[in-house]
Amino acid sequence: MISDTTRRSSKGEIEDLIRARYSLIWVTSPEETRVEESLKKLCVEREMRLEVWSITEGFKTIANGTGQRDVKDPMKALDHVLRGEGRALYVLRDFHPFLKEPAVVRRLRDAATELRKTKKSLIILSPLSKFPPELEKSISSIVDWDLPNRQEVEAAARKLLPNAPPATQQLVESDPTYMENVVEAALGLTLVEAENVFAKAMVRTHTFDLETILEEKKQIIRKSGLLEYYEHREEFSDVGGMDILKDWLVKRRNAFSSRARDFGLPLPKGILLIGVPGTGKSLTAKAVGALWQMPLLRLDVGKVFAGLVGSSEENIRTVIKTAEAVAPAILWIDELEKGFSGTGSSGQTDGGTTSRVFGSFITWLQEKTTPVFVIATANNVHQLPPELLRKGRFDEIFFCDLPDREDRRQIIDIHIRKKRRDPSQFDLEKLMEATVDYSGAEIAQAVVAALYDAFDTGNDLSSEGLLNTLREIVPLAITMREQIDSMREWARTRARLASSRRQQAKAPGGGWMARYGASKGGLGDKAGENTPDDGERKLEL
Ligand SMILES: Nc1ncnc2c1ncn2[C@@H]1O[C@H](COP(=O)(O)OP(=O)(O)O)[C@@H](O)[C@H]1O
Ligand SMILES: [Mg+2]
Image 1: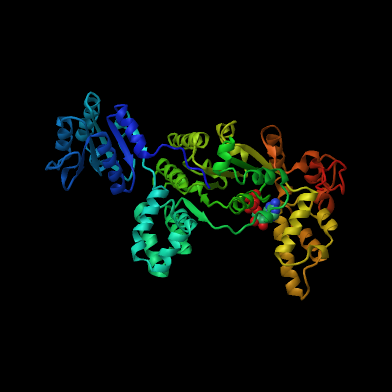
Image 2 (image 1 turned 135 degrees about the horizontal axis):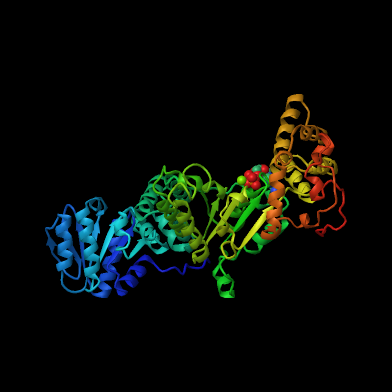
């Protein structure tokens, strides 16, 4: 059982705002009908009149009263709101185009002040939160309407049940987990999208086929241009080394259950993985999805700011909303630093948009109560704003260094096995020696290259073949030596090491340069590599 979110629903939020006498509220949602249904319920409960306006129909009373007022003109519509009697809530649909008119904006600002003295509130309902800056102070709150919750999605599915063949109906009745899985698969979609997806599955397979639903969801989420619903392909056992990080993650595999909440555990917030490129940061993020059996949403942070899809503010809100609807879920932000580099997105050149957007992201990260676990990765810490790294943002910041001896043994083993070869047939000792200063990615690359060579020469993959290929690959660590050193220095006081063994690394060694290159020592010099046994290593017994 997954614990329920403790977040206040949008309907509840509106109720609070009305009670607190907020006069002008902006509601963002593409689901007009759904929002109005909720507001209608709210108005019935609170005995308020609900009047909804559109340019085509004027005002229509839909709760606690009936009737229609033929006021299609936006200015007259605002007059009507001001003149209205008693307790009432007014909803203006698609009003944002009229906010281009200075007179309408002025009237709306006056109305916001006037309404505060009455028992009336005004909601502007729009798919976007786009308004002129003059209005900013008058709009007392912006509410991003929730996507449908489990109950709503389940109701949409059950509506289709009468059309289903008896076998499917029986399945739904006899196995409660069946419907749970169906609902889970559709979370993150709007109600109309969910209804369509269910209908499509029903037409195609006469059941609520999970594959169809998930496939559609993937498409819909991808269409937003920001998130990708990532399929688990990587197993946790595919990650070599990084014992501390892996322990941390394994320990939290049930941390999202209601049992964990009852036990008094806090909800894990997220981690930041920083370090040398190719050390398995992205790989780990992907593998956590499988370990925790949770959906993984990959955020393209560059696109949030690229200006190709919507405004950056809108984008980050969409991302958060989708992740919260899919929750419990993992939000994977790969190469976080990309959000801060590139033209037009630095604090100086974009009028502060980047810092504002990240400000709201950081606030969400720190205060969220929904089970969305954030895994952010970064190759360059120096491009990250310091406020992101402050305590309380992430649960932990892990530093992923180049793999040490034992880590490399595991990585070599994993990649040989992946090629369906038996590691015991290889000289692992020699390979461990030959891979000092190599990242996991470079080891993986060497195995593939050696496999090509072997295939070409009609041999099988062998230690000798691998050793030859390794000699030809100059590890990135050689060219990036200074950056890596400065990152290690940075991490020394600010991050936890992902692998325990690095802590004991100290003795000088040769590294790649000493073995294959010129006189200058490789990174191994500093990190204490190339010593067959450093004596202090904690053994895993
Ligand atoms: N620790 C590791 N264990 C196993 N394979 C690894 C490891 N690190 C890197 N690799 C291999 O290199 C590839 C690229 O690594 P990646 O996770 O993208 O690195 P990063 O995100 O740290 O730059 C992985 O898909 C995997 O094949
Ligand atoms: Mg990566």
